[in-house]
Image (cartoon, rainbow, N blue to C red; front, side):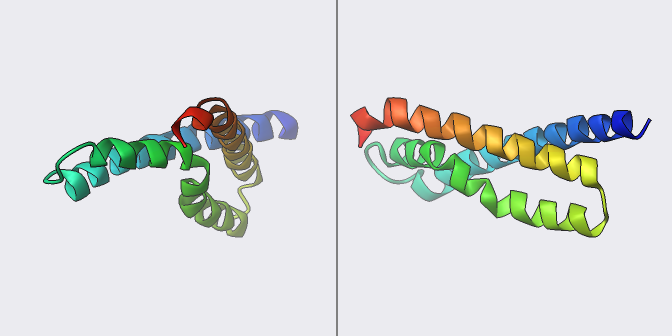
Length: 105
């Protein structure tokens, strides 16, 4: 039974991370609008492109504190799920940067 409970915790951790990603993406779009709403040209688009390519670094701002808090509360399954989701996000984001980033930068 402990293995099944840990697997459910891992799934909850991945879903928690997906929710945090959704909040972070909305925050990035709102921040882009606030900072570059009066700027002529494509400043807002450049901000969004740089934020998209550096998303694996941006996620460290909220993943590390959540992992530390989950470790303190001894929620091992959820903590493992958050770490697994963060690694998968970093790999996908890094792969997209390698494929599409060459033409932009």
